[in-house]
Image (cartoon, rainbow, N blue to C red; front, side, top):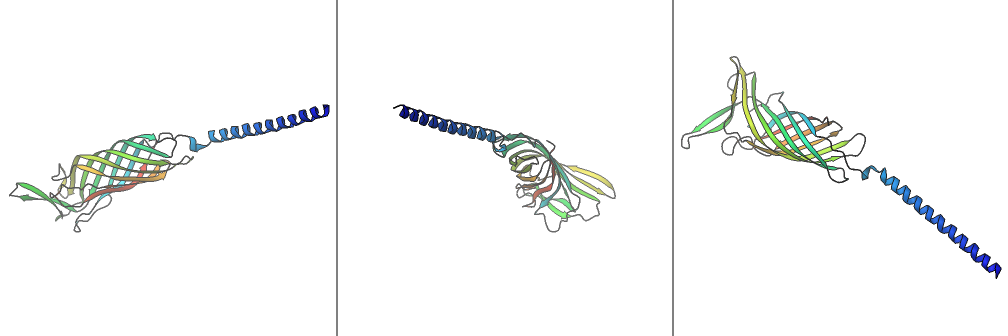
Length: 241
């Protein structure tokens, strides 16, 4: 009887030791998993970034008449102030804000107005200049609202992609012409479509990216000027913070 009691006590002791060992191992595993999760960057939310964007671009048109020749350089600038809202703990953010785009088109194009005597209106045509000019620039100043979906890696050196769209309004437009007689500036060019909307794209690392913009809207009002002419820009984006 005494031996049976000792055997039972020993068995209970072994079982208790085994259960304690299993419990300790389970607690250790859970603690390790908790610490691993704590230091897993995938579980952290992105910090807001890319809030100031400065783009230096080559700006031009697509679809202009074949008789028109562009001239280089044709430099424009875009400045945007953005809000950056991370989406959960993902690598994606939602960006929106306000921007100002200075878009230029250097060419040999003269803006010729043809009068419609029946409707008492003017239609714009683009024709090559018949005299020598050293400067011929058409410029637009566009106030814009950009909206973007952004991707950033959670690494020390961030790789980023921005894809979005923008809508804007041409608040000012003019032509600058310089010839042998001097320089003149002509404002409020007729038949220009004031509405601008299009798509934009950026890809890069850290504070630098390649940027591109294509406007789906046409330069001139429908049936008031050459059709299917669309502005575009491609260049370098500097993103300080």
